[in-house]
Length: 287
Ligand code: AMP
Image (cartoon, rainbow, N blue to C red; front, side):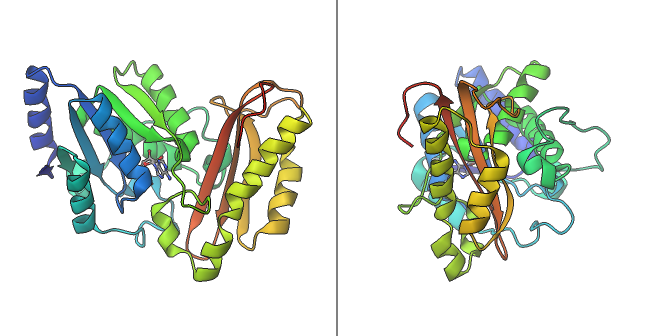
């Protein structure tokens, strides 16, 4: 595995590989790797000749008062895991490399960022889209691997690819969970013991929302989802609702088609998100 920390060296390396006819798979992350990230790497290794993993905690996507400073970081451990997993290029730019000047141009998300996480994190998805656009320019991947764990992010990036005629293909990979159902996240280490015990209930409640919607052939309303969550969690509910996917619009009660049940819960030092995507109106899928 080769570690590269500058954009110039990465671009040089990529153009050399492309001349050799190699396909590039790209897994962008903020590091503190867990099995969710490793599953994206595996997908990339399977589908591409060369896999690039980036680790960059992007300041642009954190709002004031959010956890940019305390976001878990351990580059040495990440390097070891990446190497064991078979990553070819380990890209670790610093802030000066990614933002050599105050940004005078940026990507602005026009649709899809006003709901779910976007509603409580203004500017977050502009920051995500901007850094992903930059990373796509640097790595020039054939395929980029994203997790369904951040389903709103994946939908927004898919729109950006279309809007800007980018030639990269997006592969969206399933949510990897702990044995008790909690979606893996770098932020899980910031939960207290009590919070960690409770947190799997988020996935359980999302499953209840899906099962009830399927059983009654009627989409559970946001008010009822919010009641269900606030009755069962000690953390502060940010949102729990069902929307169409990938459009992220409020569905009619009798809606048939792809839906997402998504929730975000704020614990003392970590805000957790999770979701389930399913086909409403088709045979009951096992959630
Ligand atoms: P992050 O480092 O949290 O920004 O995540 C980097 C990538 O890993 C994103 O595409 C995430 O959606 C994906 N990811 C994070 N957690 C999981 C998970 N539990 N299962 C699958 N993919 C994940």
